[in-house]
Amino acid sequence: MRLLDILDQIPASSVGSSSSGLQPEAEAAAAAAGQQQEQQPDAPAALRSTAALSQRIEAGIALQQARQLLQDAGILQLPTTLLAWEDEELEPEPAMQLHRGLLPPNHERPERLRAVLARLRAAGLLDICGRLQPREATEEELLSVHSAGLIAAVAALSHANQPSDLNQVADHLSPDMLGNRYTYRAARTAAGTAAELARQLVTGQASNGMALIRPAGHVAGVDSGEAGNYFNNAAVAVRAAQAAGARRVMVIDWDVHHCKGTSEIFAEDPNVVVLSLHRYGSGFFPSSGPAEHVGVGRGRGRNINVAWCPPSVMDKRGRRIQVEAPPISDGDYLTAWHMLVLPIAAEFRPDLILVSAGFDAADKDPLGHYRVHPECFGHLTALLRPLAPLGLLLEGGYNLAATAASAEACVRALLGERPAPLRGTRCAGVTGWSSILRTLLVHQEHWQSLGMLNFLQLAGTPTSEEWEEVQDEVEEESEDEGYEVDAGDSEDGEEEEQELQEGEFAAVLATAVQGEAPGQASTSVDDFEPEEAL
Image (cartoon, rainbow, N blue to C red):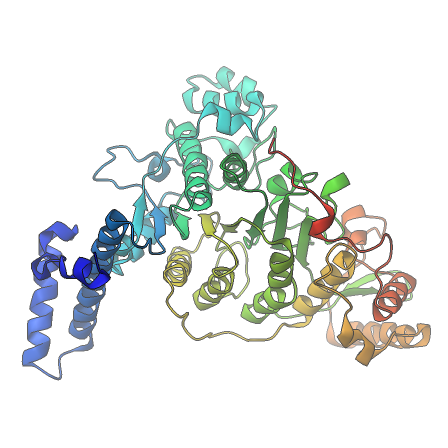
């Protein structure tokens, strides 16, 4: 059967009909808007927008019907974008939308998910994407990542009737984890849905997709949960992908908080890269993930941290001076993408890329305080799309409008739409450059694609005299202009890891300029043979 013959079988009457899944009221409104636009060339923008939306939905429905006919005929399997979400009409008690933390103030609230679904529904994207039915994770899937004690503790949390019932959860969950009777089922559903998305991507049933799930999970470790993270959705998805045949999996976490749990779980796994871009320092939760943490044993180099932290120097009196800088924005993430994320992904050649897609780095988020715009998240997604099957897992994001807009930009990029033009800056700032440079220096020995930092040859290696001049200038500016000075204990472990002393920095720069990284010889992914998934 020829392709044109198959396409001719799609009845014109079915396009935009009630069988499309649209509500009859929405169809009537869209049709009326289209007729009014024809009669009135100068129709208001709202009506033109409604007619355009109707056309987009009709095109998506026609594409779905054509895809099904092609698959039935065995001619061609068109790329498919899956969207996992709870449908209130099909599920009387959607646990992920009913779970709620009991201790105020709690930013991780059900309205986050509802805002995203409302925006995608209004844009017609829920009708265009293939729907993945959420499901609960099996006991085996949870035990592939977490201890039996943590699983039992989360279960007990949802079924506790008396304060004494909470005693058994104290060893596994932080005090802010109190939930309601839907919490355990919501956590299992979030993990199971992530696992199912990963399985379908690895087995070729879809090209990409996004799981609209909550609660978040990237902070949850093997035996503990905190900050509203019960089970690690991304880690459960990785293990499900490995069980389905994936040899190499890459996890990219752009949530503003470090993926403490994901990094811990895969610290020794050479077949899983965990790359996190997060805010670091000044006590920002969870106070983990410095650039120098690279993994353990055979997993060294597979744990990559872009720790956004303003540069700081020591003055002559031993005080730590942190240079004031604008917040992280679009240009910082795009620069990190081109200098770190894409080269490493190309060298690692993953069978699956999973993104812990938290949107709390978005502009106006009450926790992140960064300025990344929805369009930027669309560009980041579009750049990853050609590299491997791509799955996005919703994590944080606490400004409802920004989170919903960012999720829409990502879904459109997954569908192949060209991302909207950027609104923010397109180049990295002071904090971005210093953080990216530190990560590059740390990981040159682990990734050949990072290679020699050629641009450092142009700048040259700073001498001791030059560093003294910098310190003098910073000290004078701090006194004249009121730069923030942190005179805390200089022996603080985590803060000291973010500080390269004069001699260390000069030595590392000198080694980088010569084209070699300090420490052991350079290794690449080909030095390792994939091991069986745990």
